[in-house]
Length: 242
Ligand SMILES: [Zn+2]
Image: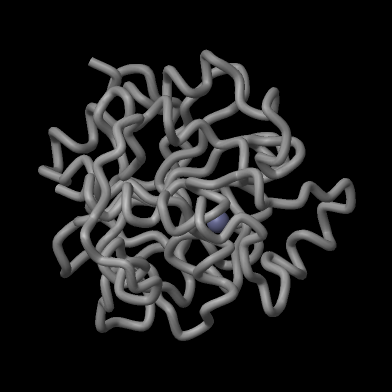
């Protein structure tokens, strides 16, 4: 159904896909959809879809092609240097890089959810394998930002998340929990911060200087102030994994 609603503007930056699509990666950019398209084209990069704040969806590559959106990335100790081969990339327009609540509009998120419904069905992608760029590249990327509505997505079945119950994993080891969820823990500060950006947002600092945020996606030597609360969240998310 949604397929007829795409504006098609194909990118030249792609290769044929050999691997199986396993993940959907959410990105954001402060630019308008057309500017995003031009910018990533110029950089030799690409995504599969761009969704504007007005809900317009642009398909820039068919999912059968590999787009260059993830860069150096990993999840669940994946062996390749990048998840590009195994993922679909979606860019969202977000003027403060997802740092403020009204960055994402309701219509934009509704359209994203329709697209996720379509893609997960069409390409047989597990619904929990919907992740943020910051999840798979914690030391490099801050998008889609602390105000991306992960909980709203989780409540309708997409992504990984927390529940309001007190059900916790029996594991109490931070590293094991982060790894179990999927994070690359080779840089522990970055992995911690990335987890907090997704699940424990009180710990995240907001920057008006977007370039500073891009250049410094996590604080060096980061440790959550509320470490007990953070551990509880970790154990809750780990418990809820499919
Ligand atoms: Zn990104």
